[in-house]
Length: 74
Image 1 (cartoon, one colour):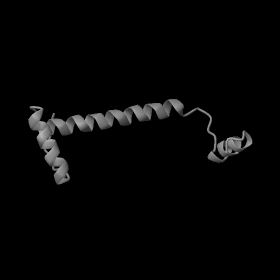
Image 2: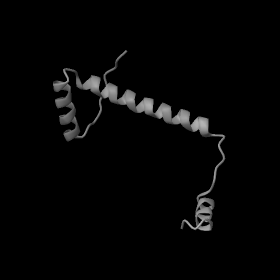
Image 3: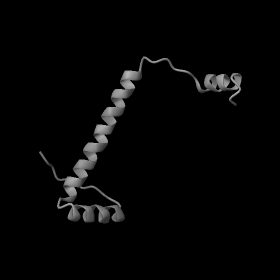
Image 4: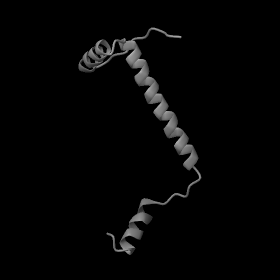
């Protein structure tokens, strides 16, 4: 299902998207939908990775620096 909406896009970005649509024999709407799906899919992947790592131990930045100094790396 599609629904019309108003989106404000930077004029130079819109110009590039229109040209890409013409050269790709597609519509601006199709390109925008693909871009949004891609962004949402990336978010879903990131959320899943965070969920999987939730139980991993956490080290503070200070502890990491202390270890680097102790090991002579800083």
